Amino acid sequence: MDTNSVHKLADLLRSIRVAFLVTGDGSGGLHARPMYTLAVDPETFDGELDFFTDADAVKVHELESLPSVLITYADTAANRYVIVHGTARVDRDVARARKLWSIHAQAWWPEGPESPNLAVIRVRVQRAEY
Image (cartoon, helix red, strand yellow):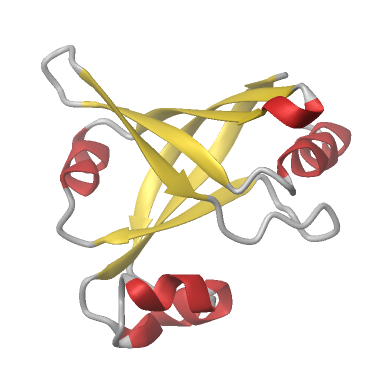
């Protein structure tokens, strides 16, 4: 994606926090689940979307074998709909988790960003439609 496209995408997503992340299970099946998008700032967005997850979640195992994902966003009040195609990887970098940490994550990982079961799904956007 070029710089203008990256900024446009960040502008569209900055107020839509919940997305549906769709992964494949290796046998032709698809799984969709709601995920909270972390830190989309049009000024600093670099084309990667971040999501916290449990390190042992089924989606982590799916991403390790099939990293292609589809992410959908909807803001019905603003009539804004975005579909993102990308490649995901699972990151267990505590420094990255600290940078993305918010009080909302505390309910899921009470040990904080150092939680041994916390991972970050990082999705490199390949293309987006809106």
